[in-house]
Length: 198
Image 1: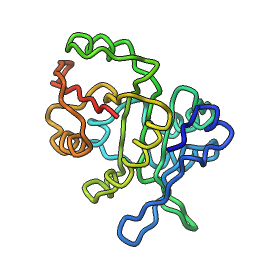
Image 2: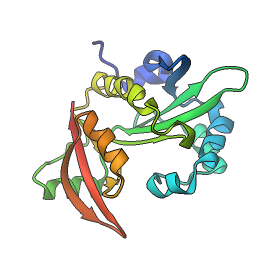
Image 3: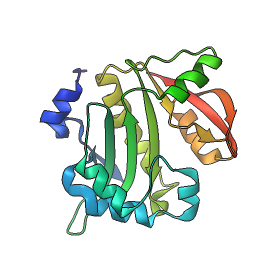
């Protein structure tokens, strides 16, 4: 497995592009590009209230899509999209992989006796369009995402802000890929922290 650096991704963002098939439908999984603002805005604004309640790493608006596409910075954050190609392409999933961990995650995991290393660990936040949830799309996209994290020299992946304790579908998904439930924390709701060692 060839190693990667963020500089490699700056010069050739397509080095981590993969094509998968959802049934007969080809899906292109690649890094977000500057020209994706309109498609990403449509994706964000098409998410249901229920999905928004479960997923909120940043505002899910067309304006935020414009900002994200204008400020792509693969040296610290990889934003992947799953794209249905064709005359009217459509983004059907959006995965964030932060190359590092935030202070609040570091503090929580230290409390569990699992120290995190911002230089070697990363933070993950996935979402899938409502019409594609429960159809296996997320499971098709995880192997190329995990491959990219390993090639970038990452040791472990934690969930951005954990996952809601009531989100049984997400918890089952993470467990399927080897994430371990490592601890719990409370905000307005109960949350699980989960970690995957690569």
